[in-house]
Image 1 (cartoon, rainbow, N blue to C red):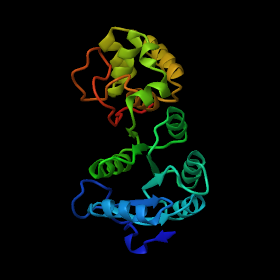
Image 2 (cartoon, rainbow, N blue to C red):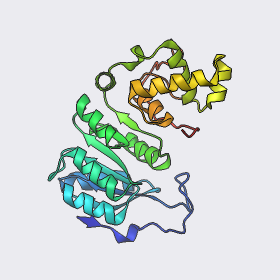
Image 3 (tube, helix red, strand yellow):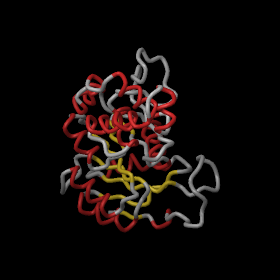
Image 4 (spheres, helix red, strand yellow):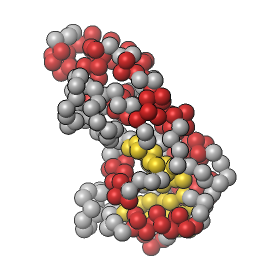
Length: 256
């Protein structure tokens, strides 16, 4: 275990913004069973002015204990962490520090494992071959936007995780879900699609059930992650609401 007290954030600093001067750095904890790997990841992250590694751990028990005490903004966790299974470790980290975002680094992207980790609240899942700038971008994304989930796994893996649910959703449900992803209210969706607001609510209930979602944000994040709909700003889709390219993070502007 290693805690770097010199990097403790200043509670009086303004909220995090752009990675330039006078902002509180994003605090990070690195969890990996190999010291050499921890050192390498630390070097990558600490070259960025807005990122600060405040703790390290080499096993599951220490990771949970230290993250609860330090409460970093982000934990970067090796999936093969000694002393505990990754799903249980993530669950305990989030129980002790609910506001901490967990990003998994893994050589695997099995659909069942990805699904189980998403269900316990993982905010990022990246392959260990990820480029350094992509790791940095993922850390920034999940720390700045609590609605974002960043996935760097194969599309086929996500197809298996979510069972190609774009084939389960009706064309109208896809339209409602795509409009929800834009942050439109039920009333605005009803106006756009020439529906009654009660009909929009019924479609949303059906969408939640089909995607095993508990909220608008959850439904949209799952749909974007599974390449069912495109996030705001995406272009060149062959069907309304369907993704034409790679998975991207999503930010919702509307509360459930």
